Image (cartoon, rainbow, N blue to C red; front, side, top):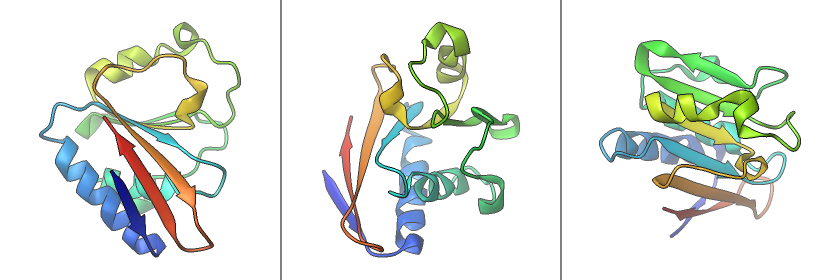
Length: 135
């Protein structure tokens, strides 16, 4: 399935729709793929908003790999600064099994849970994004 968004706000709104859907679907992990500036963090802000997390609390990570929101069992995992990761070193499966996880730069992982929603974000131009989803 492909979805086009035409602004940052539309990307956030689409993210909130995804977040609302996954809360009741049994999907615990959303894996985000795309180049730098594609909109992964913007989409994450929308997804997180469905869990009651404010936009200002979701940031593109500098050095924090996992941002935790334990009051709603939500985890924002940003693997941008991690190369050749070995899953056992971070124990991401602990997060995958106990809450909802959004993983930016998911291509850096070798393995994801079976019920993972994979979203690849492609830039068309400065504002337009194409999101391809696969379950």
